[in-house]
Image (tube, rainbow, N blue to C red; front, side, top):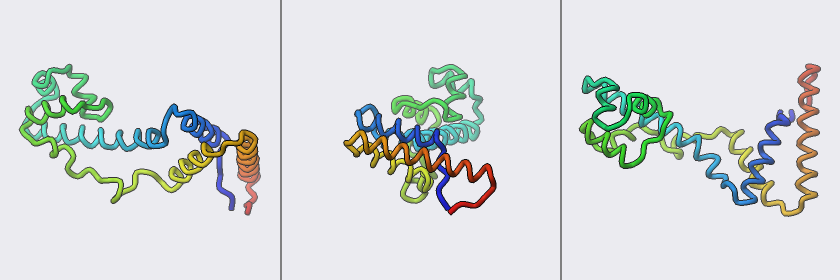
Length: 162
C-alpha cells in the first residue's frame, strides 16, 4: 500500500527543504521546537509541583520572583520559556537545585520525540535540499503530488491500492 502523502504535507516539506537549502533554518531548528516544548512543559509542571508542596499560590510565587501572576502561570504551563537566570531565581525561591526541575525528563535516546513519519519527512526534506538540479526537484515534487492525488482518489473511492 502506498503511503498517504497529502499535498499540503509535500508543500511543507518542499518549503522546509528550501529554507534549509537557503540557510534560513536548519533541520535541527525545525525539530528542536517540538523537544523544547516538551521540556518547557516538564519544567513548568515541576515548578507548579514544588510551589504546591510549599503551599504557595501562583501570585505569591510571582511576587517572590518578580514577575506578574500571568507570567508565572505561563511558566507553569510551559507556554513561555524560562531563561537560565530566571530559573536560577525560581530554584532559589523554591529551595531546590536547578537540576530538580529536570528530574524525570526523558531524553531523546530513551524516548524518541519524533515518530517514524516525522523522521521520514525530515529525511525527505534534507535529501530534497541536497538536490542541486532545479528540474530534478520539480520532477520529485510533481511525482509526490501525483502519488498524493492517487492516494486521495483511492481513499475517496474506498478501493484498496497497492
